[in-house]
Image (cartoon, rainbow, N blue to C red; front, top):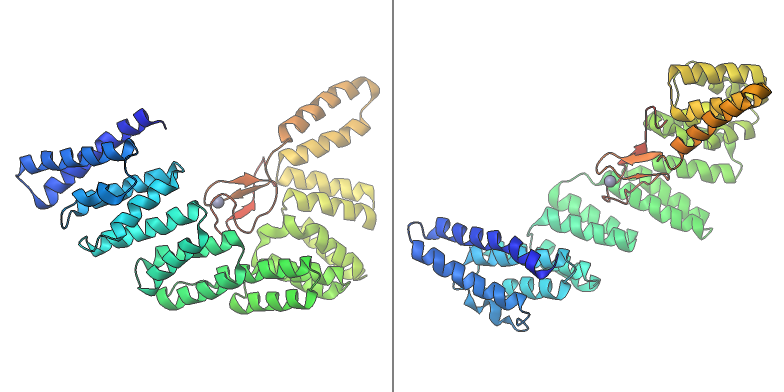
Length: 388
Ligand SMILES: [Zn+2]
């Protein structure tokens, strides 16, 4: 947005500010409304012409001019969204320093100031401003949310855990799932540094805080699999399915690995039979088909595959079936089948496998925290013809 565009945006804001002022405290005093607007436009002109290096801009407020302060605060937030952090900070800081203004207006400006600092990369100042709001019990929910997100962005999981637990005490909010994810993040870092005992203890803590944490069971299963402790891995995978069956596409390959590793053919067959008896996500069908081919024979595997893709049609299933037909087709028909295969490959190219229920973010990788909206546990496999 360039300056002329901004002016078009600000004119109704200025008018609304004046109107609000007239409504709230000065009903019937039309001249004061216009005085106010005049003053507001002068201030705005000064701001836009960049002659605002000192705080004189705001000296035009008289005691209790809440509406003007609110409108300026909104303008500050607009600057922040435009990436003009210094201006945003100047405006919000000036409002917080005005002791004659309404307490709530100053608190809002302080919250906005903390966000300006954060977006401007002044993370220490942002954190201390949020903490000051929390300490004084002002705008608790918003301040906790913003500060937790700041710690998440910095991947400071220990601070995030401490703060989330403090938030639970102060607001009564259930933070158990969030805390469990923070411990899972710590566990991932520990695994990357080959510190497996530490990783395991973080995961136990995750489950202590939130026993329904499927992610912790997946991580424990993966660690058990690497350590060739197949029985333990199977137990954790069973738990994952019990807690959230939609995660089956994510765990199916590893789950078969654990079942094969345990060398328990009876358990492996029982698992396959259970899958055969139900409708499954396509990734589960594709993996089970391979296992059936090894365990019994190709014919049984193919029959299972056809049954399943008819029960729950999907483009992925159709594409793989078409590729099967390519190998079986007669020389005269092969070209036509090849065209169908190419078309289906193109249709499926770049089709996302996961979607966030909160913001609609799509991707091909499973995220426990949505990269779009920063929600935990909101990303899941896409179910339906174009997905699983
Ligand atoms: Zn999202």
